[in-house]
Structure formats: C-alpha cells, structure tokens
Amino acid sequence: MTQDIFYMSATAMAYAIREGQLSARDVMQAHLGRIEQVNPKVNAIVTLHAEQALAAAAAADEAQAQGKPLGPLHGLPVAHKDLLPTRGMRTTYGSKVHEHNVPKYSALIVERQQQAGAISIGKTNTPEFGAGSQTFNAVFGATRNPYDLSKTCGGSSGGSAVALATGMVALADGTDMGGSLRCPANFCNIVGLRPSVGRVPQVPALDGWDTLSVSGPMARSVEDLALYLSVIAGPDARDPLAIAEDGARFRASLKQDMKGARIAFAPTMGGLPVDKRVVAAIEVQRRVFEDLGCVVEDAWPDMRDAHDIFMTLRAYAFESGLGAVMDQHPGVLKDTVVWNIEEGRKLSASKLARASKLRTALFKRMHEFMQRFDFLVLPVNQVPPFPIDQPYVTEIDGVTMESYIDWMRSCYLITATGHPALSVPCAFTEDGLPVGLQIVGRHQGEMALLRMGYAFEQATGVGLRRPADI
Image (cartoon, rainbow, N blue to C red; front, side):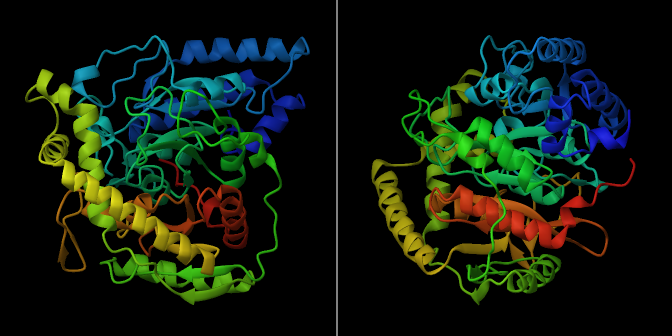
C-alpha cells in the first residue's frame, strides 16, 4: 500500500487500471489498508464490505484479462451515502428506525456507478435522514474533520467527504437539499457539486416532483468530479424531472479560456452574517478570477423571499417523507427532524401556493441576473468548521440564528433558485481549517460551471493539500 495509489486522482487511477499499470486488486488492497488505518479515527465509513469488494476487484481483473468491455470507472473503489439504498448492504439513513435495514434494491445512482465498473466498498455516515449540516447520529456517532479531529466535517454528506479527503475511496456520492454536497466538501477541502434538478435522476423517490433534494458527485478534483458526473447523469423515464441529455457530455475537455467571463462577486451575500475568517478567505479570490481574465463585479441577486420559500418547501418535504415514520416510531427521531415534520403539519394550502408563486418569481429574477453574469461567486458556508460536540451553529458575528439550519443560508438560498452550484477549495484559515468557494452557474449549466471550477482550481492548487497523518 502506498500513498501513490490511494491519493491518485480517480481519472489517473482509472487510466492506470485500463493500461495494466495497476490491477483492480492493487487498488482495492491499498484503499482497504487505508480504511483500516484511518477510519477508526474519523468514523466516515460506517458499513464496510471488504471481502465482497476484494472479490469484485478480482472479478474486474478477470474481466479485463478476458478482453471484456471496461466502463469508465472500472476498478475504482466507491462508497455510497447511507441515505442511498444499496442492494445487500445495510442502509440505515442514520436512524435507529432503520438500524438493521438491508435493501433488496439499489438507487439508480448506485446502479450506474456499478454498471460503469466502480466497486462499492460500503456506506458513509450521515445525520439522521440527512437533517442538518453536522454529521452525527444515534446509530454510528459523529464523523470527524480530518484537518482537525475536534471539528465537524459538515453534512449531511459528511462521511463521503471525509472518506475522499483521507484517501479511503476514489469517489463518493451524496445528496443535497440545503447544502449537503457543498457544505462537507467545503469543510474537507474537496469538491462537491449540487447539480440541477433532474441532472441525476432520483429513482426510486417518494416524491418524484421534489425540486429541493438532488443526488450528486463528490471528488478530490473538478476533473474527477466531471468524470463521475458523466456516469451518474443522464435521462431515465422513471423520473418525471430527468434532464434529457446524455451524461457522457461531461467527459469533454474542461480546459477553456475564461477571459471575459462575467463574475458576480458576493463575499457577504448582500449582508448576511459571515464569519470574518470566511470573508477574508473569499475576498482574496477576487484577484484569482481577475488574473484568469474574468470581469469581476460586486453584485448579489434579489433573494427576497428565498428563505421563506426554502423553509416552507423543506417543511412540506419532511412531513411528506417522514411524517408517517414519526407517527409509527414516537420518541425515536431526533428533535430537529421532529421539528421539521411538525412545521410541515402547520402548513396550509394557501401557504404552499404562496411559496410556489414566490419561487417562480425568484427564479425569474435569478434568470435575469444570470443573463448579466456568467457566474455568481459566494461563500459555501458562513462559518469555518466548528466543534464536533456542537450540534449546529447558533450565532454568527453577533447575530443569533433562528433555526438549526439558519447558518446555512449561503447554500439553501441557492437551492431555492434551482441553479447548479459547485464547492471548490480556495483557502485555509490561520489555524489550518479549509474554506471553500461556491460558484453558481446558469440554469442547467453544469458544463460551463465545471470549466470555471477547473480553471479556478488549476490557478490556486489549494485542493492538492491533504490532511496531516492522523
């Protein structure tokens, strides 16, 4: 086992396997060794199928030896967020309710990875039912930030982010309602993409018309993330919102001259409370975009009503998806999940209708804003990683937060607009904590967004910094 293998880029790793420079067995053994070394300290992978993964790696090598067609992720170790059903692999949703659940089917996003040759090694930790941007639950406990074990890794795709940051997997998936692909990527110095609704079809889904929650990719680089997206994206007739574009388009070159690209730059997002360390880290990035030839202007879209829209539709989603679970298992769900469900039960038809109309107006304003600009740049999180024993942030810069997710407005306001957003590493605080940059693209504009993220990443190199040995 060498660091040369487990910290290789997924793109380079896949190439080395195809060219016979590495075997799938070599790769799997290196990653399983890394898991044995690191996972007890960070608690990122909560269910591990080591024997099955080794057997799958042997089968992958045999298939290659026989000259069978190889998928773009052939032989790569991947892990799946514990919210995503995975056939034959315990999937708990981070809840005591499903502590021993072993599904007989897999989510489409899992199937597509396996069909592309990836090898599923296990499940990654998440807060109960993905509620909150701090990864802890009553089944497995908390997942720690590899850059400072006393801090949170964020959430709710926190286990996936930490597994990637520490070299335990080549790629890892996640989900995002209010920031769950972006927040932990930001806190762990990796890359996370909240794709457009329908870019990665949601199959199965309790609510096929849900436009808040999406599934998506996480990786250690934008290039790896684009490769990953090319596999999990693409239409599926079972999802009424699926985008009818082949995911393979994301394997096109990411290199593009960004001269003339128009950037709306918003380090404080129109006056939201933001930790001074985050503001300072983001402000420095203005020069990076200018050096790339971009035209940078201080600007922020009209986000009025976005908070109320998101909180209303989130409450509806929790009641719709988990109301019956709460009734069947009284006293089991954590208090914040119960609060979300109860808020959903307070909703009236008129309030839902109002939220829908306001969201339509918000999208119109955002669309018009994004005709003036190619990208919107803002913080991912309003704070750096906070203590592991703190469930959520209660105050920022003297401003008291209204709820357990209020400190995540920087992410969930963007969710409400329906636009894709990329979290990419940009800096570290003086005490060594990662800070990410959020780049928002035009509606369904993932290809342009990835190219901008790639150009920024190549210019800074911040994402190459790995955690110290832990």
